[in-house]
Length: 196
Image (cartoon, rainbow, N blue to C red; front, side):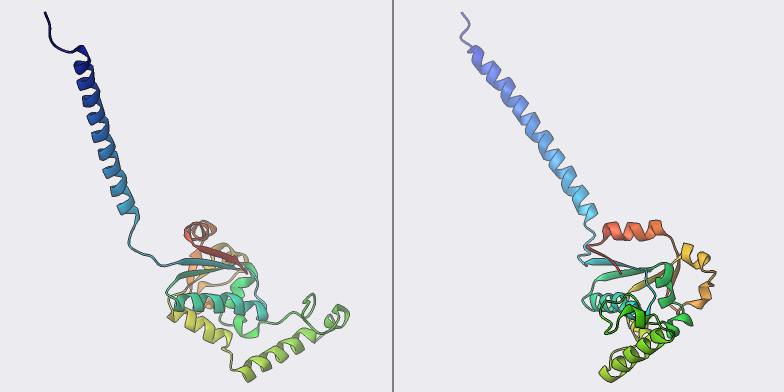
């Protein structure tokens, strides 16, 4: 007569199966931990991408102030300049940017008056005077500060070609020849994306 307990052989096979499953799970956890370790390059810096599309005097300030401030906090910052925003990085054109009085809701005069010849020049001079009196940095100073802080100021290649600019027309340190695909990739990796 067989004294073996038939249920014990079933239990043994189940425990062997459980042990194999546990081992397989442990191996899978090890693989996942390795892949996560490969992804973590140890760089905890925040990333910000700003797209600068406007090249008026007043709109040159926001991307440069935000970029230089974020860089001061140790963030990795890219400012992608495209269309009229490219004039901010153009050495000659950046010194002659105008503030548009028409359509600006904060201008203390109606659009009919703001549209008169010379009003943009007058509005620009008034703003420049306020900047000088306040001791606010100039556009050129903000560009220099941004570059010194490690901000990557990028000039859109398509816009360079469209506007018939030469890559030598831009401030030293500006990254030229950047396409939209590169800008989109940095945006996808950024913690903060801004369109100015």
